[in-house]
Image 1 (tube, rainbow, N blue to C red):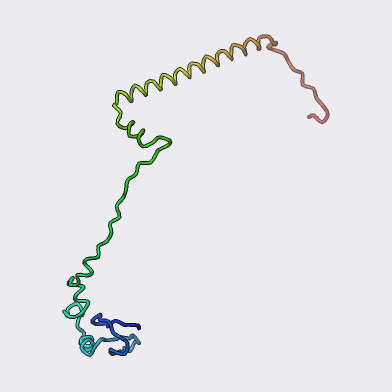
Image 2: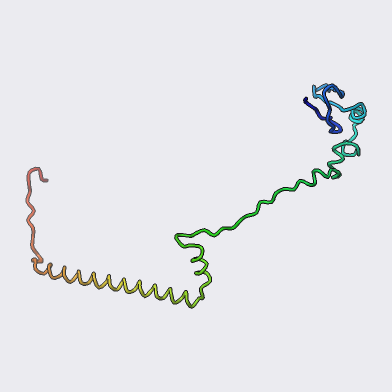
Length: 152
């Protein structure tokens, strides 16, 4: 069974009951009783009539609607690894003392400087070897350019 609602009071209307009114612009209004129809035609305001559903909603008289509470979505923080560092290692790094961090930074800088120095020494040795082989060949050896067929 399809029930309809009264356009003035908001009550449910069972099939076979109520009054229907069709306005000149073809808008249909269905009323629960002659009382609701009379109030509608008298242009009364439904939220100001204490017996209507609209009144109960505006004046918060329905306790059933108050019990429904909206669920609060809470943000859950999780620690995830960052670029291969586990959350525990990250926490340990954050809680380190500044002196320890400074010492680690200096040690890393020393290691980097040692690597650079070794690379410089290796390149210098390569240049020396290259210089010895270059001395064996004549410095100003001219190469004759020959014109072949089709040359310009």
